[in-house]
Length: 415
Ligand code: GLU
Image (cartoon, rainbow, N blue to C red; front, side, top):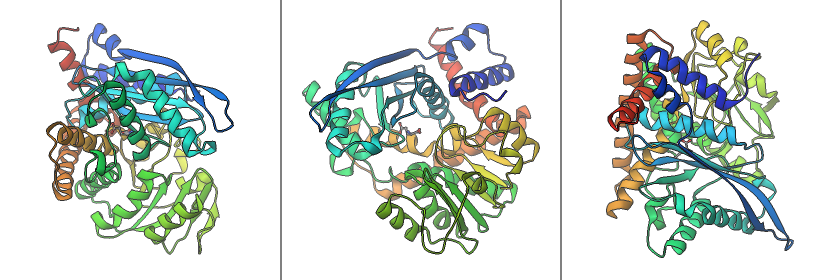
């Protein structure tokens, strides 16, 4: 039976890495559970004057390498287990790119698309009122995730600073630049992913100037559409999708026009010259590179068999189920796993924290250059682990991340 509980999947991945690394029982137990988790109710004044209750979470998965770090997601399907899984993956993600940070994640079960700007602001501020004592530049630093953005971060930082009565921009990342944000954060997740594709093409001889498809057209998907061609000197975007549907054009889309259209109409559907196709058909197209950039459990045992892409660059967290992973490996598809491919965002978040700390800001070129160095190094460190341990890329990345966290736990005398 295929498992769709993301936290069970995450725990299974830890066991596989632990087996390769010969970790002892106490270390496995410690790494398989969040160090701290907080569940709370939020009471928010809605536009009709009534109070609505929402369920909120903040999970600080592991602190061994530094303060917890990870986004806050506003989504109707949020559960404690999805947040646990996402916090767990953040722990390995920050370790794979060697940042002095732990992992965490937060969320609110809500439908942001049906809420007004004012309701979202009330919810964001209420969320921070609930977690203010738990977060801080040296404890836990949130950021955006699905359906949250720099505006959400601005309200949250402002609420935190009001409660603490001090200026503290580094408490949250991916803020607008006018209030302590950094150059290069908005496209960082996509840029990091495209850099890993560049390295994969160099090592394995894939051709990035051929075709590519993007599943999910939120921030990461849109930026990948624009950056793929810029960084890889070519490539034809033949299909994209969002929560409303998927579209295809064998002659290729102009990424800029597509982003403008999506921002104007709220969906990619109906883009001039496109043909609507089913969601799964996008995943199964014969393309050189496929970017899953939406949610968990998109590539499953149902569609993996039909996937024809040569490279899968996972910009989303947890898009591939373990059963699908086995199928993709057997087919020889090169998967650049989420904890590596999507690590660009948190890397530039870390750069933002550093700049906030000394209140002096870097140029865009410097941010890009340092991001490139981190992701290129991480790609090759993972490749080395894949070769040395003779494992598939996801396990290789897990081995690198888990080994670093386990070592920090040991040095601290926790295990
Ligand atoms: N939500 C993003 C992720 O999943 C960014 C996290 C961060 O910057 O802290 O990687």
